[in-house]
Length: 73
Image (cartoon, rainbow, N blue to C red; front, side, top):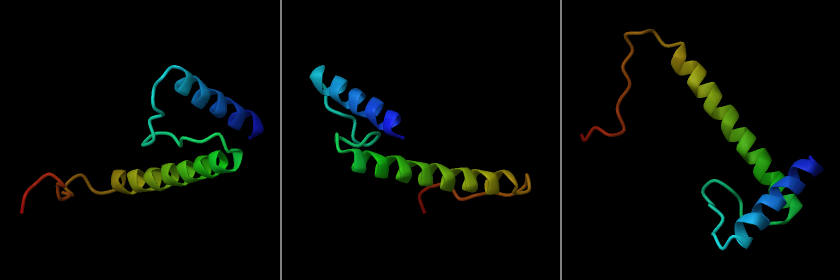
């Protein structure tokens, strides 16, 4: 984990040095190792939840229909 945090910190420094903003919806904008590790853990939890949901959706019968979030009621 220390090497992963170090590489993440280098990425943040590179983004900042280039004059760009860190894309906070995708990354946490910090150099604090504890916050970075927490962000990694939170991201892993989200990925696991999504994988579980995708697996459950894949197991549904083919004739199953799901409501569209884009359809107006």
